[in-house]
Length: 156
Image (tube, rainbow, N blue to C red; front, top):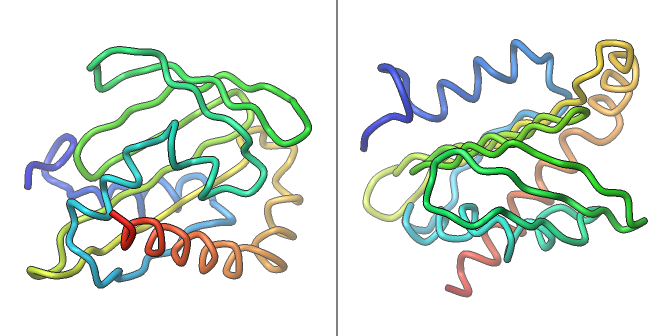
């Protein structure tokens, strides 16, 4: 597998991103399904992201084959946010003015996938909110996210 850039693989890059952001949500998990099956769910941002993140009602990605795209998210209350998206094999980074979210995956043997997710609020002033989120919800939210990715990938 070719890493998204440089010598580091997608999971290593996401670990660095999470550490740099002091991300309240950063977790890794092994999914007992082939990489292609798992990544098909993750890479289908328009079709799957609203199922994976409970507060996202819609995620529209601009058409095209470019690894760099723009997207618009609409939350369950109708608020909209514009995102810059970088999407490649095993790597997805989505950034808005307020949020950074990343997902990474690598094959793990013939029948498994190492998958990771990372999320953070961008404005530094919201740092205390991130610390509270990490303690109260971070791990539980990550487990729910992994369960839903695995469930939806198993349907493919």
